[in-house]
Amino acid sequence: MTDRIAALADAAIHLVATRGMRGLTHRAVDAQAGVPTGSTSAYFRTRKALVEGVVRRLAELDAEEVEAAGLAAPRDPEQLAEGAARILDRWMSAARERTLARYACLLEATHHPELRDVLKHGEVSRAQAKAVLTAWGAPEPERQSRELVAFLDGLLFDRLVGAGALHAPEPGTPESRAELEVAVRSALRAVLGR
Image 1 (cartoon, rainbow, N blue to C red):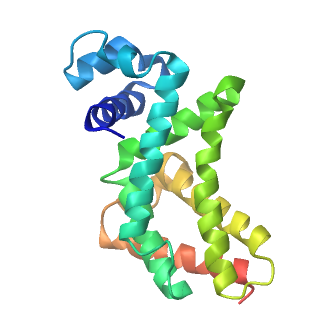
Image 2 (image 1 turned 135 degrees about the vertical axis):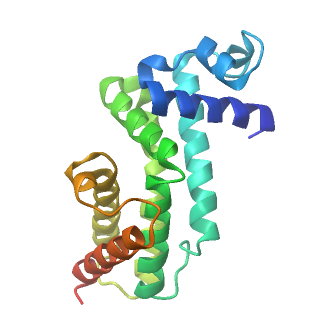
């Protein structure tokens, strides 16, 4: 992704997170990015292309963070629990806008079949989880990886916008990361049958 396309996608992510999908227009992205009117349309010809660009950028940024945290190939469940808690906490605090934009795009895809391809970006985390669980000798890594990713997605959603947000520690704090780590460890024990 070129710097210009990344900047436009980042501006679009901000708009989706702060205004919702209705706030995502080519003109609004131009204004947010501080570029001449029509610039966004030159790179993303349609609304579908713009939403796909947002999702690609979200996936790119998430992949960078997962790789940097060593979660692509954690050596054991403890490292995975600690790293996942750190990432989840970041996605609720410093990267909160990205997480809100991700959920908005996923919800948009449920109402617009032409956007269903954006759901394919979620396959990356499932494939990574399957590879990790296979390496650890899990008896049913395909099923177990789906369960683990579903749990992590649900935990993130609940803590960010669900009832869990009412009682959980403030995101971005050591207490938040500690509570998330306990939850991820519990999920790993359940998924791995340990």
